[in-house]
Length: 354
Image 1 (cartoon, rainbow, N blue to C red):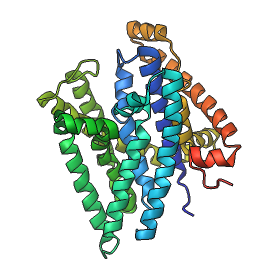
Image 2 (image 1 turned 180 degrees about the vertical axis):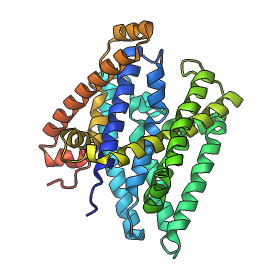
Image 3 (image 1 turned 30 degrees about the vertical axis):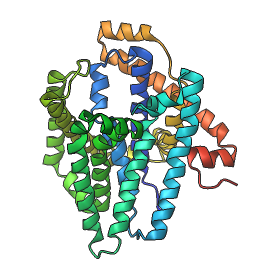
Image 4 (image 1 turned 180 degrees about the horizontal axis):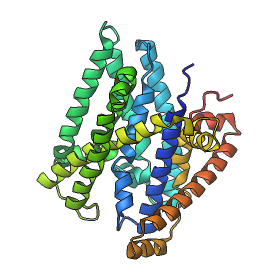
């Protein structure tokens, strides 16, 4: 059994908090009408970081992707990613929103449940590439090259894909639009994990670390100034530039955050209460992701106050505080459901169902 990396679990927990924070602001405070500076800052690296972590832990050193491994991997991911999404997504759609299945299936966001579908698509690509390269003596390099080429291709076709109605409809149903955007970060994490020693030696370079911080905040400032998220960007040169700047922010945001958690990994260890709790959140991200939408508050008054005050400290205090409370309740509900091994197996991907 592969030993869990504590700071990676903590990093997942941190990212999950940012995800819930974003949903509290979007659904609870601003109702899609506004995106604050701090919200856009977190958004610039939040989901890239989540997919980076997924790609990082997807790599299993020494694993041979023969037909048996491919089949087992596909079945496992279908169960873990699709069953909870359909179960919780349908309950949320019919009971909470009062909408229909056609609304759920025909929008790329899936009322918020797009992430697990997109992650499934990424794993399918990753497993197939790994399988077709398993015969090669240089499979590590071959897999890395093919994954990188696929990521580049998907990123390139992202914008024109939306301009063709038939393809755009397919993208909406499958949430492929998000796969086009984020698969590159999955691949980035996978390559960093695949060449761990060399990658971390490079990331530890003090000049690169400093450059990553400067470029992250610098590029974000440029993007914020040119393409504020509260302004609509139509398809065209502006959209292409905005997409490129978003990708750059994602990469440097990942490097800055990943380096921070690695450098201060002792803060996130099991020996510290803060580290234990953050790791626990990181190990239960699927549970939290599925349950959070049922608990998001509807408090537009706070949103109006935050927009008028522009106080980032108050926004962080309220947003993070409510997010942690929601996560706590999610974990309580999760633990209750997990009392049934059958539910734990089918709803949250636990290993044993009996």
